Length: 136
Image (cartoon, rainbow, N blue to C red; front, side):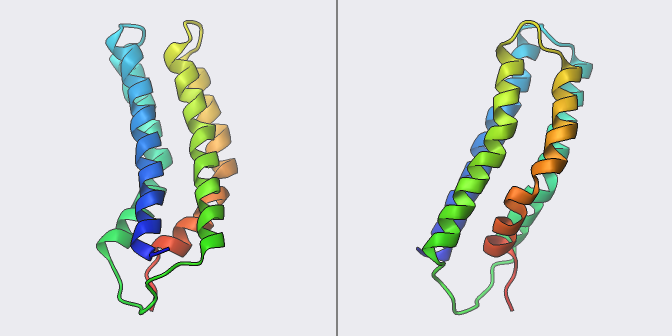
């Protein structure tokens, strides 16, 4: 698989889940189920959660390199893709529960993120470094 295609697939997974979770914040806000302060709190938390990962991805995209290696090994790509899906799913399911549950709270979602994000970022750190870090 070509490096560009592998990157495109991985970044697409991140962006689709990111937009999905933003929607899961905006839907309750639009319905009047949460106030703007709560929406902003969750939005800031989500941006903080994704900031490092998206910075690595966009840094790799904007700092394209010419390393002579245009293909990536298949096994690392598929393992990385599965780990990216797992990490994003661990976040997205909770946002969807928040979006569609009448009894969920901003505090409960925020506490979940405070617990899960630091404990699971290792799942994607290696894959992002492998596919998006600049090579000499």
